[in-house]
Image (cartoon, rainbow, N blue to C red; front, side, top):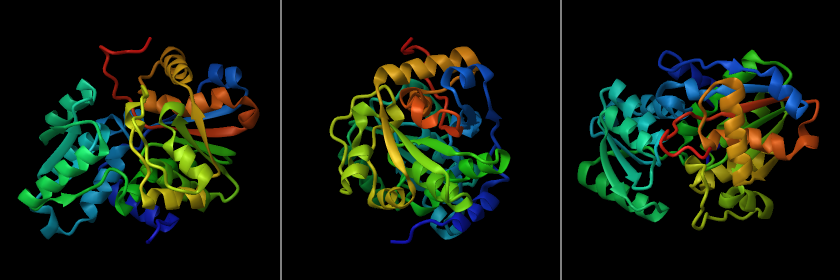
Length: 314
């Protein structure tokens, strides 16, 4: 199994930079005082489609040979990867075929449809998603672009950390959310490649803590009926992302639902930006582990800002 290296992420950045937004890094004096450390928010909520996933999707589509693009691309996603692949495919003349769980937030369903995707809905289980994808691949001949179990996806996702660390020097730690592990994998490869001494931390809901269990036991443990407000973090690690995370991540911290909601509300109120619950896990990690982060310069990957405004938790 080939694992991504820093050079792969740098090559991905060269490939996708004409298509992506170089998102801002924001700071908040108030939050620095509250948490006793310097926080640098890499705001992928300002990325195209409102999430970091446009980076990986664009890299995956551009890395496909022209002949393979003709039949279209297919994926399964709770929303952000679906929207990202739909836009990346449409921008490059490729047909996007998307499998989404019925439970996906309405804002994400609407966005995916708006980017021209042909959507197939399924039950909100990994098995149902994968079965629907296989059926489409057999019928249409489309190429699967997995949300995270994909070398090119991981390399694209790592470019967010690349931009952050090019802009902000001397970070002591970097924190990214963990769902399927694509962002966490890319972030960890980039961070350790640029600064071997940096602490790379994963943020995961306690109610969907399969990555934490896998990391602590050394055995890949799939998620079973996760129930969390962080709807983007419901999926389990793959063999590829687990291998990358075991090699490069220093620890995974779990956070409560209350802490996710509190952190999300705090960012909305103090920074005046919209972030989704999955993004709030990174600040929740700082909130729940004050001694670990005290006095440090900490990079936080804000993964997205696609929120159903009719279902806010506060």
